[in-house]
Length: 289
Length: 234
Image (tube, rainbow over all chains, first blue to last red; front, top):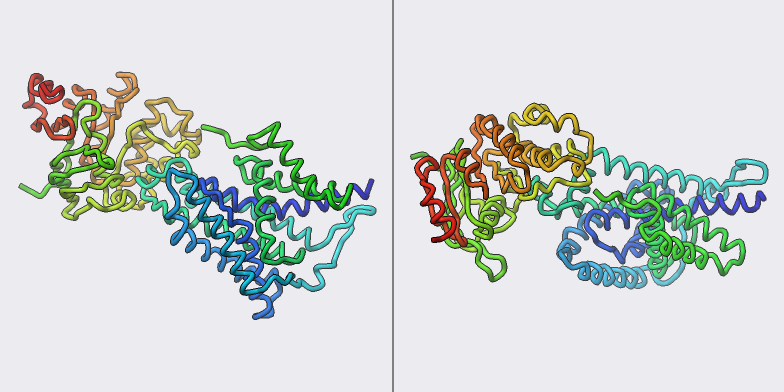
């Protein structure tokens, strides 16, 4: 019994990471209807930025977030302003193709620069610390911190979306771009701010990913799939839905892995397909006005 | 004669290869209400969209407050003091009534319009301030759209088909508030298919026909015959 409790708990905690993968993806799709195929590779890019920061400055990975988050946000702003804004229009295909190309460029750029060697960020003693939540149920300090951070990120995004002028601008631009311009909103800037925010979240996700397990330039697309699945399971309606989507995916993978190690990913994909089949709008769909 | 607030000089506007406006000129003086009438497809909405910066003329000039604005993007035009109440209201459905009004103030122009004054002008909006915009009736949505435009403290307000799809009693109710809006020295351009309402509310009238100004004059001088001749092109 406690064995299964442990497994489900591990799944929930990893679900926080998936929710962070998903949140940035969902934000960008929500604001500008852009499906960012390079999202997973940007997560890996953030991991390498963190690797450079930690090795060159001797910082702890979690402390390195102070630099990695703003760096990724700036990259996001510029990427949107200089490249992706030019692809947006009535047709969904150009941004899809351009971000697909971007994904290939990032993967090969990282391969060229850092080689195919697998890397990991070293967080020190905290990596092996655990604490007991009840008889026989243990939680690692790092997964726990990761989950708390994920909840804080989701809560922060939710607040930003519904309580700030920037969030209002995001929602208005998402509703009606041309009327948003009539309000004095430069949609190119609004989109760039959304991408900056998305990559700030990507930075946090990338660092936790890199502390948790080995990474190399090729693992981005699989992270993109996890993010997609969490978004679709949760529905595009709310950030909290995204968190629930991530947790469901994490738990499904953990249970699958327990049955047979080869079933970890398969169990996640099957759960995703089942939810897509019976509830294609996701668990928390957007309330249409 | 003082310089007009808005001076449109012979603009040509196109949708791709299709020309929608042919050498249209129009002047609006400070504090004046100007009506633009015409049949469907005459180019009235195109004219307002071009003034607001959503479209740009290929020929001619638009001068506002002494500065050319013909090529300025819409988000810049509103900062200079031109606000459009778009056809069909086009409130933001994901935003509450109050958020719709607040986003109108995004351009941060100084002036006397604020939430309290909009709620004074349209008290029903105050009661529904926290509801989602789509839950309002058509007339209330029109009030919110006008309020949202006023929140930018414009010196020129462009109103596109305010009466469209609304019951006559509600149209009268909305037009009845116009004098208290104009009282502040605001200039207004009204595009209307409801000619009687437009003539009553305005000083100057322009009638567009197939993208050209077919008739122009002071509202009280224009006879019914001349207007219908220009309107229908007979």
